[in-house]
Length: 398
Image (cartoon, rainbow, N blue to C red; front, side):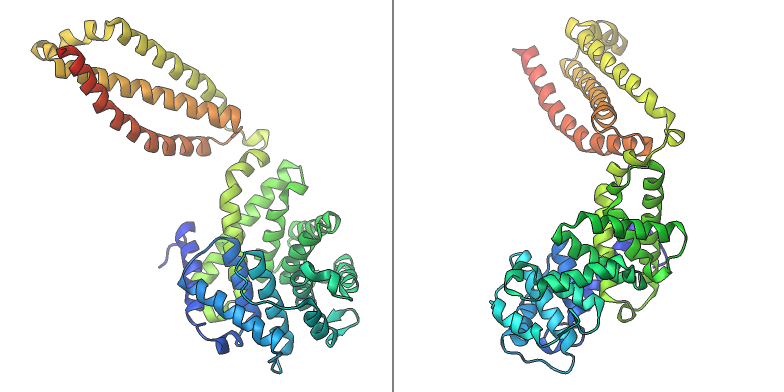
């Protein structure tokens, strides 16, 4: 498949994720990439994905939590196993899929054996994931506040910039802490690197995730436009990279972030279009559209009034000759007039809704919305029209 169409590429990413999930059907297969699998689960549930493979993964992660936390069946890869079990616990609990109970005291006991210098396994990402995972039981974790302080200091010292994935988990953790000040710092650091063109290709997806999800922290429309363009380019580049690369060579974090960012971008692009537009970009057609909508309203009312007064029949029926006396033809003419009036009202209200209420300022968005509404609503008119014609015929013959 050579096309880079956005929606087709999006499906390629989804299909590759599903392909990865098909490889995980037993608890032993979770051990191959435990953190990656639980991160997959987080992004899939966050984006309301459903499927047999996800149900299987949910069951396996529940079993995994029991193995690692309750039974302490931990191998030499204890860092990723403990981290993934705790993350799985938090994710399943967050999305009401948790079937395995664990005790906070047990978590505190296990983690206390591995904390050193207020963090875990000498690894920022794993420490941040653990902090995110235990935030619901923080009152029972004696070293939680020290861990939070350590993570915040690493962010303030800008150590998080060494790896784009650091930003993702820092942001998710800070959101849970509701630390707006440090979230704003991460946003500013990310934008600074973007503005200086100092972001590696492998990290640009992570930086665009931070910038897009926090774009409202900045009110400058020119900067908002740059963020939108950077996000769109990052998504396209990531989709192309996934399209031409074997799935086993791409991290699950990367694919999960792309899934989430793509959905967030699609949900909010129209809203952002009105936020980031500048006067130089303003489509002059938008200024004419309200006048056009008022014209449609006027013409709809005018034609409707002509129909009510009988002028439509008076002027058009004679042109039909002998057909003009056929009551079915008359009814059909009235039905056609009804469709014309309905279409004019639909155009008028669609334009007024987008421009005056939604305040969209991009003509391509306004036009797309109009076409979509027309396709949906004109069917209603076509369904209603035969009943109108039948009613008119019955009225004529009664």
